[in-house]
Picture 1 (cartoon, rainbow, N blue to C red):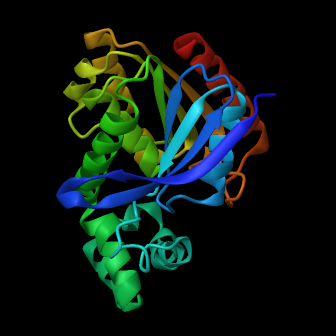
Picture 2 (picture 1 turned 90 degrees about the horizontal axis):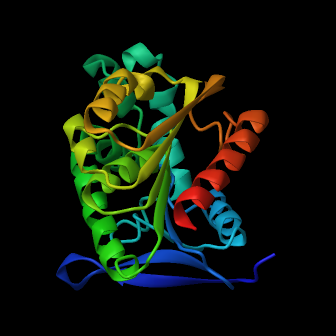
Length: 263
């Protein structure tokens, strides 16, 4: 098993600011993989997954996209959970209902409202900021790497998909992440991409038929695995939707995908 070295580091973004990232280096690296977190941020799950990848022989970096000085006290895992729990208690068909959302907002603390507005009502603005941050990290830590990959979960899965249309990755893995807002951007993906989806995840899966149309149109190196009967975030063994069988199968497939495309 490869010997690992891990540390917390910083990378520069706009206006001289810096963000944190977690790095795990493998003794004999075969390439470098960027890990993009779920909505919860740089959690124990993300660090654990980064180590799993590093044990396979890759250098791994995982940014804390909430590590601006003004964000750190607000965007903690606990605060985000408290802010989002009322929304997820709504039936899926109510989650875009302005009246239902207003009722949820009325129950939140000021911190909860700030988080909810950022990750829900200002979602597109949030994505643009995070994609910009990821581009800075790529330019500083990935640009000169010969073989590079990316993987993201949930929110991070969508960011990984969108990052892959802007930057070159040899291998991109999307765990139940949203498709690019402009599906024609799929034309710009140069490497291989692998999407893993939960069967019971209608919001995320809604655009998959259109994704396949674009994949065929642009001859994208795209493969997909759908796990019937599973729910969003089935891979996260610290969450309520964890599915052991699907998670173990997905891990084997991801390892094989990276072996084929990064070695």
